[in-house]
Length: 380
Ligand SMILES: [Zn+2]
Image (cartoon, rainbow, N blue to C red; front, side, top):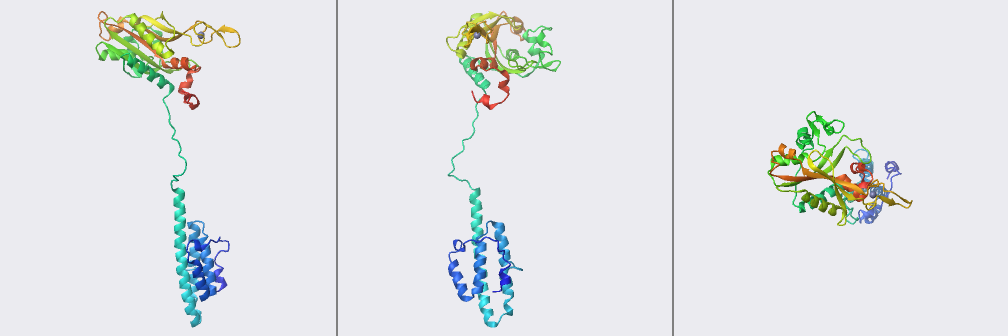
């Protein structure tokens, strides 16, 4: 075999063991060595560089150098046969044809091995430990809302909802807000147009429900409300409320009181102390505020946090914290929806879900509810 032919193979190409691909490699090598030692050298070197190809591109490059139709080592050797002596022609011709066929077999085997390796890299390894899927949970405010809905469902209330973008008529006028009430001012309320607002409370839901239905009614109205507030640690310009409405014949303040106490006990435990004090809201008469004994100082108004007794910072010394507003539905509200205030009476109440969550969990900052910080949300 002429050295220039073999020298076209890159001496830097890594070699592999062909017998891992073709078990007959050693026997074939011996057969060629017996026939034509120079040819055996070409075959062995060719087989080793094919076996050593690291990927499909390297294999293709080496196949072209060995078996390429124009410049391949084997092709050039075949082209040199006619110049040989008649005896040599026969031997070299037979040996080259064998070497060519065996190298082609090796290429095929190597290609299959490389393809298989690529597939198994992409394939799913079922022996790997599983990845636990990330599971979310309800927002703390949604948990409070659902808990309250459960409670009121048990007291016979159904859920009703109303639009967040509301006519001023429903948000104010039919709820007995006077034309000059300060809540109607753009300082307190987001106006979409002169007649349309982002609702400032869930109470417009009562008006809509009473217009659609005949008494008796027993409904709760959960939802988001909007106020044009300066945002700070205890004020947001959007928050969540739940109103309740009970309308029937002979509904009394005693019914309201027992409902509110049932509610407060379910939220704060059966031993919680409550008080109801009068307060003004346009849509109820009389209006009331339900307070619960301060959870921090247990109603004493004084705390001792290790630095001596001092005024309780949460209830500011009063011993009470405000839980919700309530009252008997104002006769003007009944008239606005076509109910006869001589025929029916009713009570209503409304509470802020953020306030309940903050009191229960000691959350100092209302903005946390909307910040979507998982470090906060995952605590509930
Ligand atoms: Zn207190």
